[in-house]
Length: 220
Image 1 (cartoon, rainbow, N blue to C red):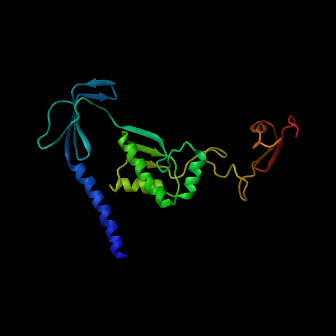
Image 2 (cartoon, rainbow, N blue to C red):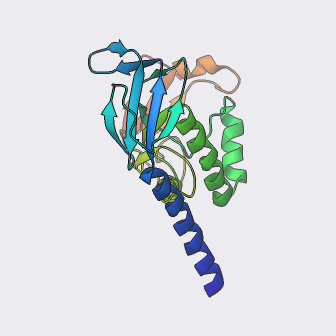
Image 3 (cartoon, rainbow, N blue to C red):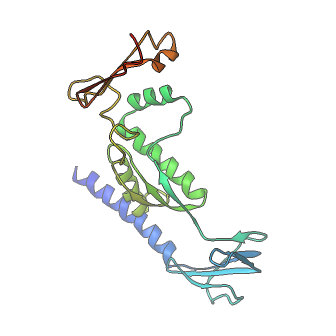
C-alpha cells in the first residue's frame, strides 16, 4: 500500500517536473504575421519571445542567445481563445436518450478518464482557459487538479462544481419527476400525450409548490 502511494506521488511529481522544465525554456516563436487583439492590426513578420512560461517581448527581430526557435512559417500568431461556458466532464451526443443511458452504464472512473480526452481536444483547438460551469462527482475538480499537476494536457480550468440555475429551470433536478421529496409541481392534460403530443396544449390543472391553479377555459 505504501509502495503504491509512493508511486502515485512520484508520478505526480514527474508530471509537474515536465511542466516546470517546459516553462523554464526560452522560446522564440516566429511567424509570417502577428495579430494584435487590442488594435486589431497585423504585424509582419511576427516574433514572440517566451521565457519561464511568460511572454518577454512581442515584435522585433532579435532572438535571444540560446533560445529554442519555433518557425511556424506562413502562419498568424494571435492571443489564445477562452471559452466561458464548458462542461468538459460531459460528452456531446445528439441522441439524448442514448446519452442518458450511457451515463447510467458508465462508472465514475470511466467518465473521469474520458474527460481527459475532452480536455486535450479543447486545448488543441486553441482554448488555453475555460470556465467549466457544472459537472458531477467532482470530476471537473479532479480534471483541473490533474491538468495543473501536469499529469494530463488541458486548458486552465475555472470550475463551478455545481451548476447554477433558476428553480424549475435547466439545472433544477428537483423538477420533472414524481418522487417522494420532490417539489409538488404537477399538471394535468386532457387525453394521452404519449398518443397525441397536442394533448399538452390542453392543460386544465396546475399545482405549483402545492398550490392549485385551474384553467377554467379548458374543460376536461
